[in-house]
Length: 179
Image (cartoon, rainbow, N blue to C red; front, side):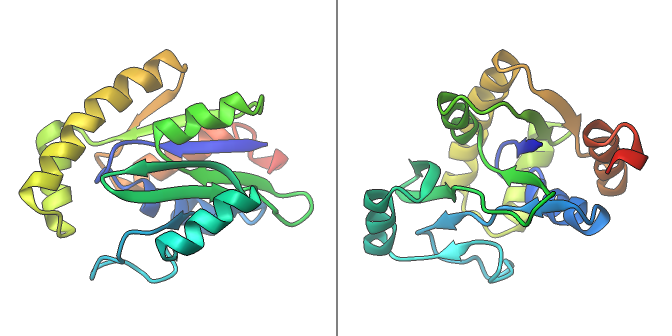
């Protein structure tokens, strides 16, 4: 099974993805690539951090399932290569999810959102985004919400991390004995 967890910046989708993988032993998280610098508050394992040149070479080599440029930086998901019998979890933006559909792949799409735009802005500031970036991500979030609705995503509000992870777990694995 292919699962896409998406949502605007600052809603906690990365944290949720990590917790889902911890909770479900047969769930494998694809590690995205980026050319942006690592945030001070960010685990160095959060992404494969590369130069523009390395990224562009990887594009030429066809190693990405999807890739995009956002706010002057590249982001991508390599073609998944999970261990046998694992479900694949992609933590990507809505634009990336649209690219996955262009490959004809079927997937379960879960859109994580903050309770309010104000909460999203507070979280973005809390992770170190400057005001200009916060405003860009808020505007982008509105477009992402609309696109996710159009794609038939299941919306989950991250107002409480444990509750959101439990809700997503029950969406992915409605019958826990099937995990």
